[in-house]
Length: 214
Ligand code: GRF
Image 1 (cartoon, protein in one colour):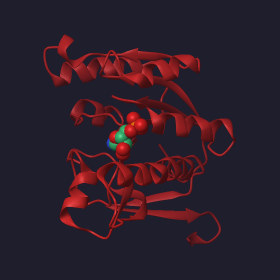
Image 2 (cartoon, rainbow, N blue to C red):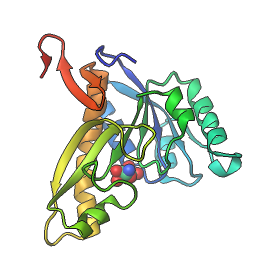
Image 3 (cartoon, protein in one colour):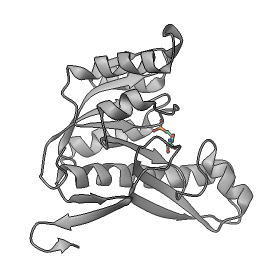
Image 4 (cartoon, rainbow, N blue to C red):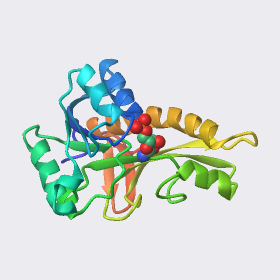
C-alpha cells in the first residue's frame, strides 16, 4: 500500500476481548474523523464481548478458534482466508492477545498495526501498566506501531505520554492510558488514510505533499 497517497481504508479489526478500541475507531469513522470503514471484526475467542459489539453495529463478526487448527500457521491461513473477500488495506489489532506468525505478516506486510499500553520499547508483553507501576517510572503511556515478527517491536507511528501519579493503582493508570489509546489509535489510522506517512526503516515520518517532513 502506498502510504503517501490518500485512501479510504478498508479495515479488519482483530480483537480478543472487550473491544473499547474497536468502538473508539468506529466512533471516529461515524463522526467523520477517520476516512475508513471496518469491514470485519475477527476474534480468536468465541465469547469476546467485541464480537457482540460488532454485531450490534451491523459489522460482520466472526470467531476463528486456534484450537480448531493443527498449528498457528494453519490457524492464520484461515484468518487470511476470512479477510480475503473484504479487500482489506489495514489489519488493526485491538486487544488481540496473540503473536503473529509469518503467515499473516506476509499476507499484510507493513499493513498490520497494534496498540500497546506503554511507551515502547519499555514494558513489552502482558500487564504493561503493572510493569510500569512496579518499575516506578514517572511517565508511561501508549504506542501505536506496525507489527513485525518481534513482540511489540515494529516501527512506531504515534505515542502518547501519561503521567504516573503517586496515588495510582493498576486500574487507575490503565483507565487513563486507555483514554489516550482511544485518542491516538484513530489519529494513527487517519495518518495512514490521509497519505501523509513515510516509513524509512524504523522511522515513521509524517509528511505532507508540499513541504516534505513536517
Ligand atoms: C488495550 O489496553 C490495548 O492497549 C491492549 O489490550 C487492551 C485492549 O482493550 N493491547 P480493548 O479490548 O480495546 O478495550
